[in-house]
Structures are given as C-alpha cells and as structure tokens.
Length: 101
Image (cartoon, one colour):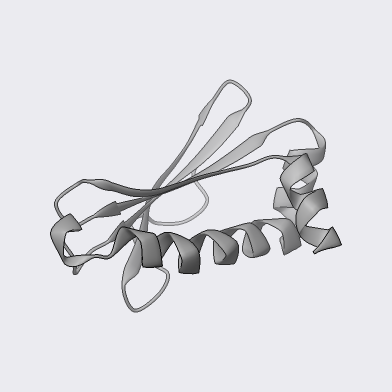
C-alpha cells in the first residue's frame, strides 16, 4: 500500500523509511538519521522511546482497529549505520496493559 511519500521526517531526529506487511504483522521501519549506533546509549533510548511508541500506537484509532483484527504492529528504529536500535512489538494485549497503567 502507498499512503504517503516515504521517507518522511517525523521528528527532528527520526524519519519513517518504509511500511510493510508480512502475514499478520505490520512493520514501520524508522531511522535516526543523525546518529551511528556507537553514539547512542541504547538503554536510555529504549527507556525513552519504547513507552512513547506504545502510547502512540495504543491511542491511534486506525492502529487500534488493526490490533483488534489480530495484527501485530512492529516499530523498528535503526541508526544511521543501519544497526537495529529499538524493536517494539505491539499487540492488543500490550495496549490493554498500557491502558491499565
């Protein structure tokens, strides 16, 4: 599917590069385009970005509908040098847990 021109800058440091489906998974591939993996404290990044991603997905009406249909939403964040930094998998149960917190 084609919804918008990609890559698309979504913040000061991150761009959405592609969206693709595999079976019941929908993956959003993002890139921190200014940083190589060695320049990033991955523990701090995960502590900051994972809850933000989960919150965004669980409050987005079209994504909630996908989750209700059994789709798993993956958000993968890569460094400038193509190292996987964050891989968040979200299903309907994870959103239900997030609402309780």
